Length: 119
View (cartoon, rainbow, N blue to C red):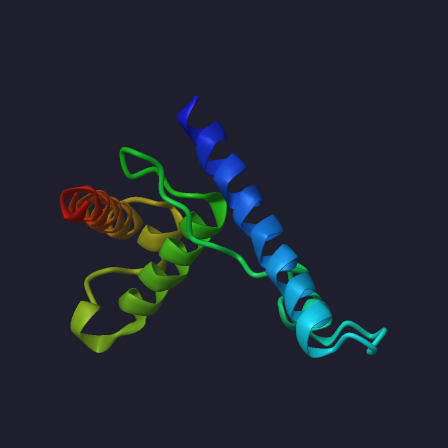
């Protein structure tokens, strides 16, 4: 379904990143067998590749995006002005992460609509 499309697009983006790095290696480091651009992507990120934030047609978010939302919610909960939001609420996915997910989903849909209107 929809989640499958997001996962497929995430994999395609990562593959595209590596493909572009390979082209950069061929263009700017043709004799360098260490492949500096590909190595930079593969060794700089813990996952072995850059992690794209991919949104679906109705605001679904890739797994990494959900992790980012939880991290941001924990950060927001740690701020003094958000003292009523506890880390327990954040980790149990009660109030704060769902608000972040909803906001990010709305932003993704708004961006997609604006992009279609520009065409």
